[in-house]
Amino acid sequence: MKILFNSDLLFATSLIKDKLPRQVFDFLLGCRDKGHEIVIPLTTLLEFNKKQNEFVNKEIAALNSARSKLTDYGIKVEEFKPSDLVKPPDLIQLIKATGISCVLEEPTKNDYENAHRRACLKESPHPPDTKSDEMRDLVIWEISLRVAKENSGAILMSRDEVHIHHRGDKEASEYGLIRCNSIERAYESLSIETVSAQIIKKLIGKVWNEIIDSTLPIVDGGQVVSITNPIFINTDRESSIVTCNANFHTGNGKELSSLLSIEFADDHPFVFKFKDIKINDTSSVEDVILNFEKPVVSDADLNERLNNLKELMRG
Amino acid sequence: MNLNMGNQRFENVEIPLLWGKRAILEDKKGRISIISLEGAEAVIEVLGSKPAPNIQYELIKDGFKIIMNGQELYSFSPGGRIITGLSLKLPECEIQSTGIRVGSNMFSGNMIMGFGVGIVVDERGIGVGAPLPEGLAKLVV
Image 1 (cartoon, rainbow over the protein chains, first blue to last red):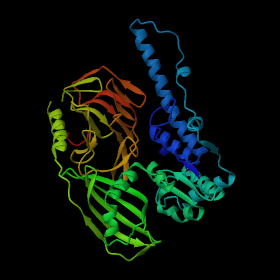
Image 2: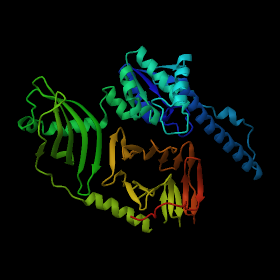
Image 3: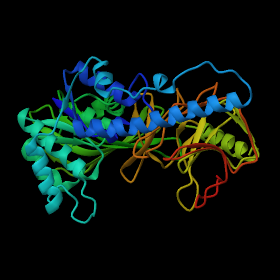
Image 4: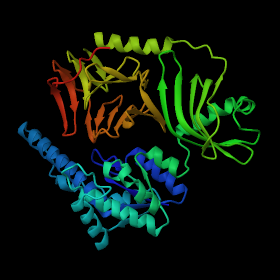
């Protein structure tokens, strides 16, 4: 799969020296292991370079200022050229350094013309109610659609509203363009298991026999297919609740999807709520709630952390 | 407030490290708390290096990311004590035992006294010793 990046998901909020930000680096390693490829639209590269050059200039100014200050105090500073010490990063090379294939994709004349038309006529996915032309975003959109069309699908990594808004749903679907607004959603789209999914699968595994024995239409031989969009919340009673979309093979040739919430403490799940249950995309089953023995938990840890913080603020 | 954090001494400061509109504090056990001062009242988002109660988050490699209204705000790695802006466009902040790293800048061995904010980080840059910005909730828990 080709994976395109908008600049906002490269996390370049400070000068990148010899390595990409950790999340991006780990993601690229995961993609490399699965044989995916990275595509950097020229527009993304230009935006990335512009930001990095600003950081480079600030760093050079800081070095010059430090030299002046030291000289003012009579401290001898060896001759050096700040611009030799601080260099802007080469994005494509940094990506390739992870071992993944990466290409720079320049917009075609057709991409420019289409983006221009969308900007002028405020056509989808351009927001209808903004003054900004967002031409850059539309060029990336055009490149993404083209790359998706040429490769029977692609992923666009972006948090930009122009790219992820539902205005673009129909067109993205037609071209097989999957839009991911975070690294984790991209992992899910690429069937690379997220940390959260691993933990949720473990929780489900602990009561799997009880799930099979419940009124849920899952039988022996069934299994968890995917866990997506997890959201965790810690309660103030030393337990956590995670809500996610869960998909299962039922063990008798069907697919079951559900909005699943699990309450657990110390890795022991004690409440499972299966809501909005669909079998082969058809709603046909009532919500199922499974309760298990609640482990004994203490709120000592939470209180200790809170008291420590309060003490700190009094100090 | 008087405290040691990231090999700096903060004395008589109201907020030792302000990252955007979030106060960052290190307790005596080296655990990090992150408190949002964006709204009318302070909201603890990270308490002693763990997600605070009633805050939405997602587990990721090496830590978790804080989510609000469907937006991923930032991630926190308890092991590395690293705060990384996601939808918050702020430089990465790392509280090391030897210093505080903000983006590519390192603060180490400073004593910062008598300021509203010890170290202030926003989208435009970084400053040491600044008045308390207007419009922030009072830092009380």
